[in-house]
Length: 198
Image (cartoon, rainbow, N blue to C red; front, side):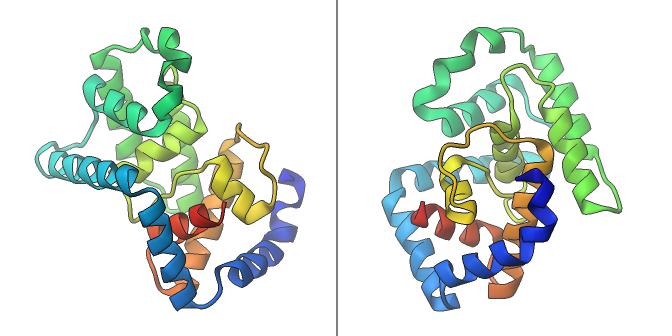
């Protein structure tokens, strides 16, 4: 699929627009997604608010180990214990250093900035692309979206995917942003509307 990404992008966007419908249809799907995931959405809003408050006082912004654990608990839910042994390698100092470096990365090309930030976050033991996307999304909700199999299926029609490359994440996020711009909504609204289709 990676080879055909750019060739297929217009088709994927067109198909997503058909599935999402009009802007009012997208909003209904977004609201359905919120309702279906109401408990998780409350947790999400609380976590986003906590992280935004930290960004206001912690300059440059970084996460510590306990804040990362909150994000891991939120993202992994029932799968939290899956890489617990690997995560014992994490130290507060390393988490602060790596997340600070990732969040400080700036680049004139947005896709390269996403690449660098994601790559840095993936150096944390137990963090792969989906978790890195969750970290970025919770910390910068207007710029990122979480990649997962449910949304991947809604966009690409493949449900058995659980591992992603950074290039796949960049591609996925570029489509989310194009759809958000088309509908004049946030990336989160597109993300949740797609989730409701999955």
